[in-house]
Length: 272
Ligand SMILES: [Fe+2]
Image (cartoon, rainbow, N blue to C red; front, side, top):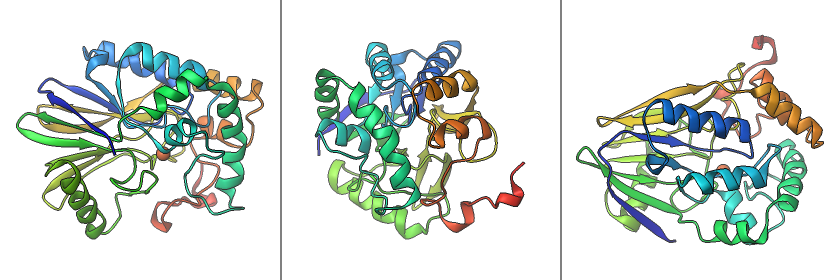
């Protein structure tokens, strides 16, 4: 797996995942970064530029023009390799499997050959130094790009990932990951694990705002991203992407909990 070294990055960094073809969210993120005085050269995306949303081609074009660092997500791996599904590893026939069939076909038809070549060439990992600590940026897991890692996972899960990362790029003090869609910061195994969340879909909490992270003075914090979610949903409806992720942009609840551990599921009776 190819990885890149971003050198020393002591100034604040904006970390984000999962634009998910949601151009409205990406534009809001770029504006939030500009307001915070963080140039796009110090913005790092953990992958899945393309997924559920209406504007795959435009979202790729915007992030490429902005010049952010992008790590390959499973979707970039699949589209770059010309595969016929998102590579999330959902069981055949599961709700996620059926939902992904809708958006993946839309994305597959919208992405150009040149964008696929860009995706195929994306690094699988990045490392950098910040305020004396060394960090690695990955998508899901170090070896399995589609591994879901949750805040509630056992310490062994994180230890295994940290060991795999150390084998590949040397030891790190912190990890920045994405893929799973729920942001968190956890001290585990002598390292800081930061899931920067995703900007293209709310974190299954009943509100439309999404999340990103800022790493500043050696500390990571999760930030809310408010954006024109109604516009993003309308664009999905206009594109015929009405399998459920469109509603999730407004309700804040994912259309399927298949991938979520039991403790992170939200009972229907608890939904507002
Ligand atoms: Fe992913």
